Structure formats: C-alpha cells, structure tokens
Image (cartoon, rainbow, N blue to C red; front, side, top):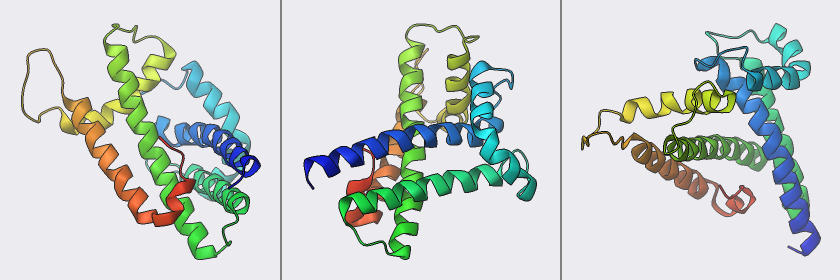
Length: 191
C-alpha cells in the first residue's frame, strides 16, 4: 500500500470513527442512566435525529433498545468497510464485506468500551465532579460493564479491581475478533 492509499485509509478511519462514536452513543445512552438533558446527550440526539428519526417510525425501539440506530450504525460500518476495501484494492465480495463490517463494528464498540473504562480509571484519581456532563456520560456508560466484576476477588480496601478485570476481558474479546477476521484485520482501527 502506497502513501496516498495509506493516508486515505487513515482519513476514512478517522472520519468514520467519529461518526460511529456519535451513532454508538445514540444507541447506548438510552440504555444507561445518563440524564436526557445532559448537553452531550442533546448533541448526540440532534446530530443523529435526521437519520435515525425517520427510521425509528419504521423500526420502533424495544425496551429502550433502538433497532433503527443499530441499523444506521451497521450501515455506517458497512460504508466504511466498502471504502477501505476500495482504497486497499481488496475485492468487493459481499460475504467479506458483511463479515468485515460486522466484526469491525464489534471491534470498534469493544474498543470504545475499553478506552471508556481506562478514562474512568484515570478520572477517578482526580476525584471528578460527577455533575460534569462528560464525566456523567463516561461513568454512565462504563458502570454497567464494571458491575459484573465488582464482586470478584481479591477484595482490597478502597481499591476496586473491576476495571482491570473488565479491560482484560474486553481486550481478549478484541483479540478474538482480530483473529476471526484473519488477513482482513489490517483494516481495523488500532485501538
């Protein structure tokens, strides 16, 4: 891969990474206990409503889980995968496109979860103000991931090892996804 195709791959991954982040937040925020009037939630809803809103009428949400948002999320991942295949010269096989976009989307979501947990750990050292909109979203998104690991041993006084356990599980899942993609894993964003 030459310089220009590598630069194109990087630009596509950065742009679509930002779009995937916004749409992922639209999918995940209703599942958490983050206030709807949080400014970050408001931005996410305003940015995604032109696309997700009309689809929500066709695909209604089920128990706070938006099927329309999931469809948009997967379509964005599919478009990114098509562009990456074109830039790298890979054949546009429908089976490979579906496989790579689905696994790539899962890899991206697990990577976001990993980095969210890491940012929460770093923020906990500075005793953050939990009324801060970014801190509220960050802790709201990661708390459901950490909860299953809270009761695992060893119990240390005032020291929570659940982020370590959750991060380890997330990285192992991401490693399994990389191996499932095989040679196509070069298209994944290094998270």
